[in-house]
Length: 527
Length: 71
Image (cartoon, rainbow over all chains, first blue to last red; front, side):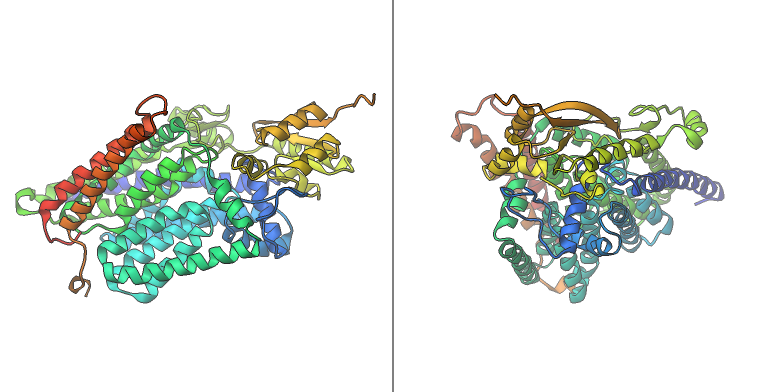
């Protein structure tokens, strides 16, 4: 590389690094803004807080929903077990779960960078940009700082894949055992990790079929033993709540829309990742990363179309794309390709020069494609320079917009008005001396009341024919709840019907961009 | 060390992919023959699945000439 090319390369790489570091800064600020908010930012977070509370008491959240408090969870236990010690120390709160998720995303980024460094050509700058590229994804930005188990699943998956990709070719038994143990951790954090497990096992069979049988058998036995223990310990509720109730309606338009959005946002990385996949397929050996990308993109993408799923289902494929594109770029810079004589390019040094100028431009393009930022306050001058205006909120820009179904409509920063609105709902709950039915657990947790029901779980159970709700319906009919707080109306139709008959809408409180509907018992005609 | 162990070749992988793609393609089309009551013919997800299966079969066929090279 000549001096001029070298200078241009350093300048462009510095610009790309600055763009991705800016994205990282916005991510940190968003996580900090969200961390202390004591209510749901994304609906369902509160139920994950409650699951952690139950685990901290040594209780399982896989319960009979026919009896008070009609609560059950559909999530595997590991993430909430990780949060349980924080419950002992700090009581029920959102901040530590959000911190765990955020730190998990940083660990994933570090693992991606390490994989690119180790399995590429030991190019530190490209490795660092690959990790930053993961954190820049709109999908990672959404889910990372939430009290959600999804990010931790991706962390375990990424660590498992990086461990196995290094250990299997070396026949490193400890490394393979560690990788498979991390895969089990991923699976018992969220069921979706089954896709990564399938990809890893398929790759092990391609590389070393005989050994793969032994390892797979051990992996399956340990996984099945945990599964059986959970089912026995919960009196069979684990199967109903975490498996049967997870089967949901599939929406084709949502899946196709999210596939399209995934490519629009991450195409700058997906194209080089696909090129490396093709190279490996025909000219080298397939890496685990390639099989992981194909499986996570296809199966995770299809799964994103199910009711309740969304853009987060693509995060695993984004991690794989960051690793593959990073390896592709570092090999291109080093000219480390082995083509058959008929396909060999001459002189290859020109390709290296082209790569040196193209690669930072690709990362710059990716940073622009995934741009999201506040447009007010300290960000206003930069937003003006970039020509960016609030598009999803008055003061927030998201390159993905909020137009695709299943793309979480979150990411903007919270204001003091959101805190005040949440406190107003909590005051209403505290003013009642009866149990309260709230569609989000955050308010009842803050008020020190029982968490009653998990609406989406009841809806899913009813769809599966596993929820009659006689006791809950009777309580509603007898107006035993002091008030009811609704937002998205996720309860089963039978429950919403009973609420409509016995309660009336008296107040609407706007928080975090959503309307919370407050209902009180109707005055009944005694005659 | 690994190279001394039996491994899946590109030809074997090609055969597996070609068979999976062909059988999968036929099975997806067969949904409309078996489940006659389904409305609307071949749906968008079915079309996508057919494309994926066809692509899998084609990739498999192109791998088969690469012989014993490890996959």
